[in-house]
Image (cartoon, rainbow, N blue to C red; front, side):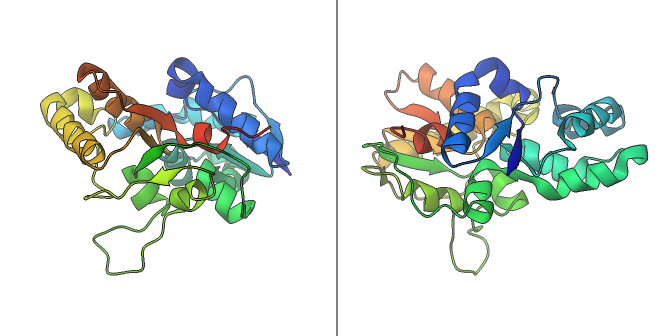
Length: 246
């Protein structure tokens, strides 16, 4: 199985350890992983700001770099959702369609494609899961609380395989953290208040770490935690799932 590793620009620039953990984890699970060196931004920031018509160059570059893989995997729900919903290149639509159908966020790739049932990982800490909106409501990584349906969570399913890890119960399991891409710039006060509310839920329930599938949301929460001089740390789920695996 040949996997193209898609690392979003903010991970590449600010949290490279998440990309490294993702690569390491996939290789330990038996995947042949290739990181296309020429990859750049997927175009999501422009599209979210109403300038999708300016993303043609990003789309074509993405197709050029990822069209030859069995699967494309990224440690980001929001960027994966953007590609699934918006990747189109008129003269390369067959390749673009292949990519849209074969791109996965990391946790869903582990549960749905590799069908991982156990992980030799160890992380002896109390952990709270932040369910990011794009992953939950866009990709269906976990059940939405507003629906009258059986609960499920692919990230939780994986974290429960980690030795020593204790998942804490939250009062509001799928409330938005307030990041929202450019929303946190244009509506800073509202964004910060929403982030503080999410952090309070984790603090009140004894979390030592907050984890999730989107570094963008985790970056927002981490910034607030630092300003509060909190001892709670933030880690992407890839870092925890890869912890202690030789």
